[in-house]
Image (cartoon, rainbow, N blue to C red; front, side):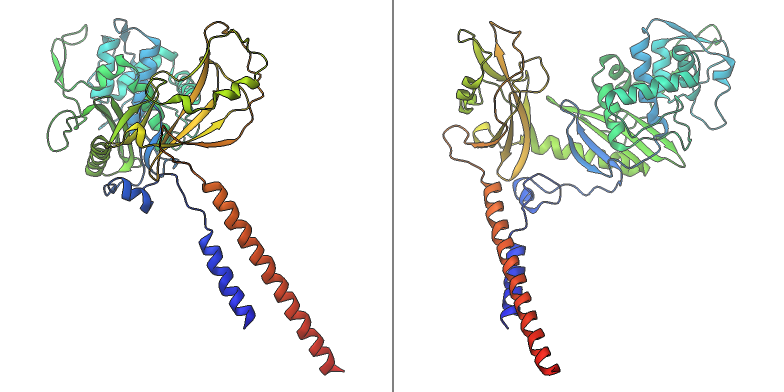
Length: 451
């Protein structure tokens, strides 16, 4: 009976010491009490990213290997903008024009026809013209294979390490693949390129006047339906690119902006309807429920950081003009009703002191709104008199819980967890000892009966 009681007690204690997840996620009941429930998202492979911070706000299967179809042309367009000028002229080869199959998206380009790079970009991104993608790859890389090398180098540069591209168009090939997260990284590079976004955000009929090979004026209607009106139109959309093959399914990369909040939604291998509806639902959710909260040394009560720790630094001259500050334009993405004074925070100091403009930072501050993790910001040291100081501090690496302003809001999560864990281990050890003692008694009784 005693053994049964201790087993029951142990189970209760183990259940009680299960660590609580204070990080935000879409299925956390505590978080749902802080912000409204997320919309029902049908697409299975999706990422919503903050274009400025690169933070993933929502995801399903972000690292799943998928085929990108014509969303590939975002990277083709990005490399074109980075390696050419809009007024440069491109003449399309026979190989480029003949690269398309019946039914492929095209812009009716003729062999030997000459366009400006700007015209080619519009054909590439508004009409998803495959022969134009091929021609641009030849113009920039010399041939498609060399251009593919440039594509993969760019993927590695931006951290899209789970992708591999072999063509500028995205026509299906098992060796041409990406992930929702990697495609969001590509899209982020595009969103930060004004020249490219001007093309991606074009919503009217695009006109190409007669050329050296055509006597006719051609009119091209963009395919991306969130910009062009109709049932999928979205007022905050500022650009995007679709893609489709039988193997890739319906894909979309959409860009949206409301005030100063810029978002990217990537949907791969979905349906034509869901790729648009899910993107719009997530955009609306974050635009309606969140805002950017900018933090700097002037509005964040930065004085709560223990500046006395700087006295440990042997390499700072006492005459130096030292201050600490956040990165320029640092911000948190917080619920719409939250203010800076509502937040609690935890400061973690770095082993090495880093000056503004250097790698790393002096300390990292994690911010919480009630139970919701709303992000972090890095603190740097400014020394206007001696900017050549080296990173060589005696600052200890520790979790330092502090209060924000005059409010006493300190996190003791780790301490409580340790206490509960020690108690649980003690009960477990006691249980093992009792079981061992009981087993020995049974063995002695068995021996007596045997002899």
